[in-house]
Image (cartoon, rainbow, N blue to C red; front, side, top):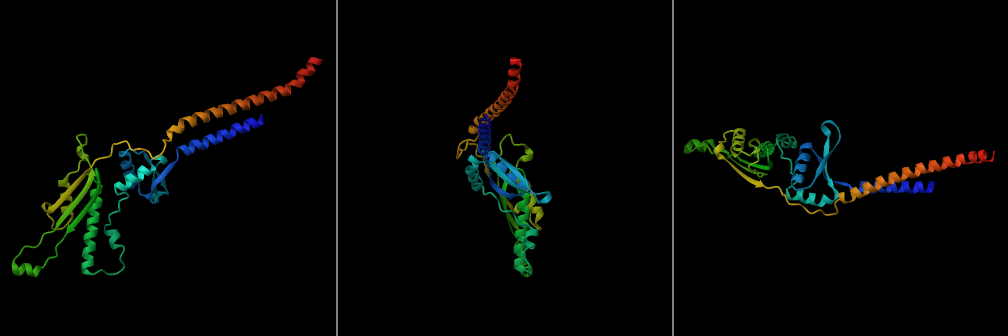
Length: 265
């Protein structure tokens, strides 16, 4: 009887292990900020892949990982690669000016300033609703004041070009979530000294979420979940039945001598 109970227990453990392995998760990206993790989750879900985030650490040092089910892993990696994820973080003034230990030349100082200014603008634009990616290129011509005075020529004006990749909008998109090119031009112009918004060129490219049902690279774990869950419940019930039966038989064996003695008397 004890051997039967042990056998049932082994089957119960095996069923639990299979149940857990059938729903195994895979990390597709780690070391992310919460905003980056949410961005990846939205992208994956728009492509028909369910994803979740898991945080490790505490306070401001929390880093997140994005996980998907094992059969969806290869498709998730493909979606991330096709959408240039993870995106390189735009470098602003803190990153660029905090790296160099040496005193830059005037030309290097100018190049660093333009790159940092572009990076700060890219960060701001990417924070706008529906924006996936942004690139900003600023041109600040060097002025030759002597030539301007002699030739009585106007000073060259700065220009800027902005490229934005965003999710396609439709009639259901609320006004607050729509990308306004005029607002982008005004934002860039107000951030750069002497730049007129009419000299800011904004090019945007709409990206439509892939609503096709992506084929899984493996079997659906839910195919195994319900049968294994049912098997686990069945094994638990069988184990309880054997346990109760074992106790009942033990009680009967203990009561048998007493009954025999009573019968003889």
